[in-house]
Image (cartoon, rainbow, N blue to C red; front, top):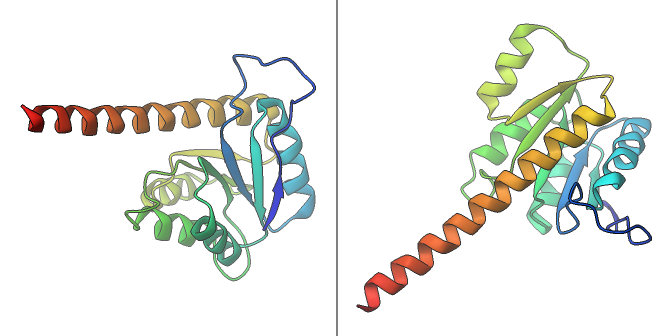
Length: 161
C-alpha cells in the first residue's frame, strides 16, 4: 500500500477540492495508478494505492477510505470480487466504489452494479468525469455520516427527556 499525502497545499483552497478525503485507487497497471493519482491531485485529497484485489482488501482493513476507484480486471481477485466482499461487510459497505474497466459490454456494467458498485467508468478514464464522480460520491458519503451523527445525537437527546 502506497500513500500520497493530500496535495494542493501550495494552492488556495477551492470549493471543488475535498482535502479531508482519502481515496483508494486499485489497479494492477502502474501507469493507470499514476494517471489517476495525478488526476485526483486536483481535488486536494489524500490517495492510497493497491495493485490487486487482495492488497486492496488489506489496505481497507488498515484505513477506511472515503471512496475506492477500483479496476475490474486484476490478478488474484477481480474488482467484482473485491466490490462484493466490501459491500457484504457491514464495516465497509457504505464506502462508495467506482468501478473502472476497459470492458464496455452492458453485461459488465450490470455485473458491476450487481456487485454493489456505486458508479462505473470505462477506460480510458477522462479526467473531468473521474473528478466529478469522485467529488460527488465523497460529498454524498460525508453528508450520510453527518446525517447518521445527527440522528444518533437526536436519539440521545430524546432518550434523556
